[in-house]
Amino acid sequence: MFELCLRDVEAGTSAFGGKSRIIGLMNMQYIGCCEADRSLTMGFPVEDWELNPAGTMHGGMIATAVDSVMGLVSHYFSDRPFTPTISMDVNYLKPVMAGDVLEVTARIVNLGRRVCFIQSEGRRRSDGKVVVTAQGSYMTGA
Image (tube, rainbow, N blue to C red; front, side):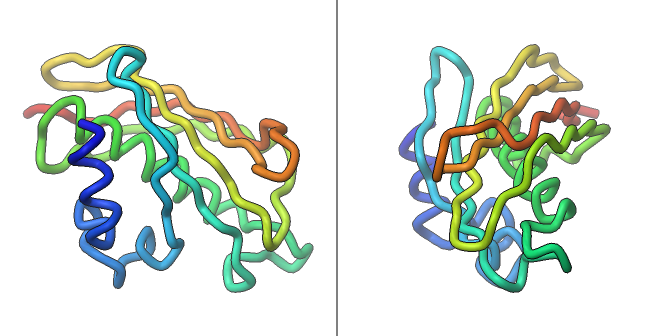
């Protein structure tokens, strides 16, 4: 799984349609994965175009990052070409400033034939503080 994920990221996040898609524009970076924990960690450098009027990463961009990592981990561990989001609950805890990196870790809680349940958290690289938590369910079969 590690090699497949790293290859996709280096190839321009092909699992998400390449650099022209939103996730490609966010410059997602591979940080690590653990097959035993069924987890994946990706980084998102916070750029000026992602900021809200308060000068922090827009909540929609944070949700996009979290949804993307949860979608990727469900995709790789279910071995499905596409695992659409069924539902997602996001809790915003702290802001993320421009120039920082949002690091999102997603872990599979339960992988069924039809649905995958995932928990995730995002941290600021600058101080390691948790800034967002989320839970989601992803379709793995019809």
